[in-house]
Length: 453
Image (cartoon, rainbow, N blue to C red; front, side, top):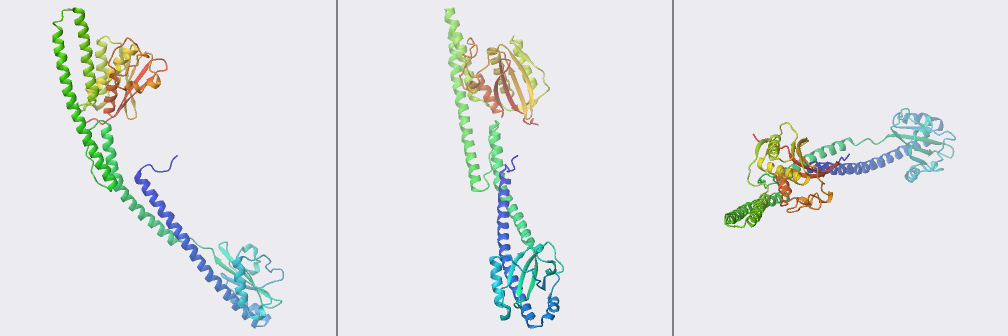
């Protein structure tokens, strides 16, 4: 499962928040580390001064009074002084820091105490220290500093100092949390300024792809986003003008082509040779059909407006008409399927699919199936099918796969081209599939667009 967010707004907030969190925690850690070092240095100096002062006092008094003096100087929660018993001397080597502190302590002792070297263990485990040397109150959160200080050639004292382990820098954590929230809010505002225009641009592009008119996108937001909106508006305006010019040109071409065809049909009445007249008539019919097909394919989703229709009733009516003409077409009943579409175009596209199935596959079985986002108009035949690598090429204009279909069939090779243009103009698509039991299945998908009120 991917946890990385997919939307730009959430990505901006996540990246900004992560950067702030990492930077704040890095700064807090570095600051706390330096602060802890300073506190530890100052505390070590205090402990050394205290140990040197107590040692100087004990040296100056009789040995039998030293115990009482040390007990009076002990603190049950901080430190404890005690005479070191034989065998409890420290034999482990000191760390570099401990050795430096031991030298500092030895230099602070009176001359008569310098018969031996002081020992300092900076971080000592409580379990390694004899119980009688520990302060009265200890717990697992304590970090021990242990010192052994010689008083003379025969006697030494122990000092165990307890300090609490460093606590979490709560104030810094709170400050980092507040900074993260504030920065995330700022990132959300910036993301909103960027994402909202992009969302409008995406919606406009989807509307155009679905066959709708190109809306004007507000040219706002940061420069990069605003420039994208400006470019989109310029592109859609140019495309609209081009398509409009193309429609006018095609209308003029269609008019100019129909006029000489009509004149030629009239002139055919004066041809006395019946065979020649029938041949010319057939040629004119093919030319007329080719002209109409070319104009329809070129116009694609021309000027018809969308209307609320029952797709099931529309397809059933078409199948009934073809059945009345003697075509081998069967229809499987379906519940009402209300959609908003250009019904004449959908009828033309479905008719092309059905006629192809009859012409190349001997029959056409038609039905409508539901899916998650729309309807599928499914047309099946019993023909030889189409090779998988040709499923895309057959939608190109004037492509006819006579080697794989019935060679006796005619056609202009524009039926699938026109059907594909109509389906895509409604935001759908056409897919061809070879059936396992033989034959071809054409599936025209139409999205379940909202019915217009």
